[in-house]
Image (cartoon, rainbow, N blue to C red; front, side, top):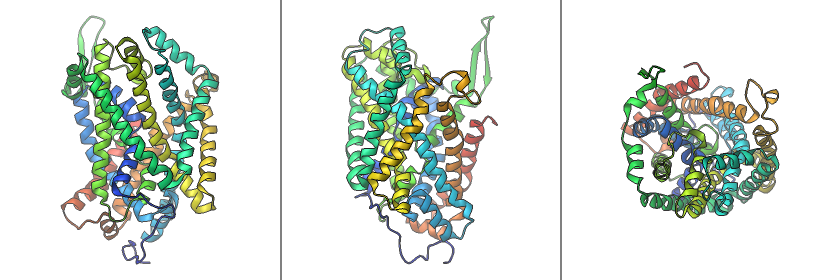
Length: 478
């Protein structure tokens, strides 16, 4: 076979079926990308890093990293039409590349599986908080009461394990039903419902007196906070020094928010209709993912400010700061329930994309039925997740830690700081340098014009450089 596979006379087809339309693929990919990172992480890192200026830097990073690498990952997926492991094996053969490139598929599947194991635990927290909010547990509660509730919840391993189990079963049920009967039906319901819930919460935030303050914080740039870190000394003198940390945070989140490098987008791309434009679908996915993050900020910050709380509350913003606000405001019980339901929907749509690559591989290579494959991978991820459950209680002590990290911390560090950046880096390098121009142009339905040349420039040079910076910063070299 000649290099490039562009002379391949027979197009591959997925044994798992395909999405019924480009719109459904976009919904599914948005569901994979939109998760706890958009609704939980984005608001608090925005609060910590300068509000509107951070958002502006983040959007630039999305354009330079997110768009080109997502196009590359979808391109590889649709070209291979199989699980990421088999897709990369086939593409390596097509391009007559070194067999080591096949490890890229294995890396994505393993990364997604590891993330699912602890993601399900955190999603279980959100599921538990739906019922807590609905029961009125936050009504009139003080900061100390909310903190005690959260600490008490985490310190009860059986309770946390139960919610982890429920969420994992929810995920297995969807994936077991297949592409059309499970994944497609789920995202067709979950994503519109997520957007409706988010818009309802934004509408509620608009009724609060601090809505304009929230918008100002989110969209008015404060570049001094992005480029300078200021501290007040013991003598009462403010000292400022140049820092690039907020820019590195924006760079990292722009990559991680789109579910790149974990096999999810690649396997979803393998189900994409052949006549759909990859570039147009990518722009729609990125726009929707960014819109959810911004809408979450528009819903959260007015609630925080109207109750005199701190926007830069860090990771505790969702589970400790917001419940205080919901407990103090009119209608807070109802809207608090909606908010945590929104969080569950976002997590659920992401979780099904994390397990799908491994399930697809089992079906393709071992002849397993989808139900059996989904149950097997779900149970294995559930078992691994027990380590995360215990990381917050029985195994939280130093004697159970490795390199000063709990099981959860180790899994989070390994996936977020090493496996995901490396996966994204090698996706960009394979699509930009190993795959022939004729093969990539054929799959992208592009001619050798300005659009293709721009993508090629970004995916070959700019995106790998920026992802490498994210990687070296994450492991402490930069």
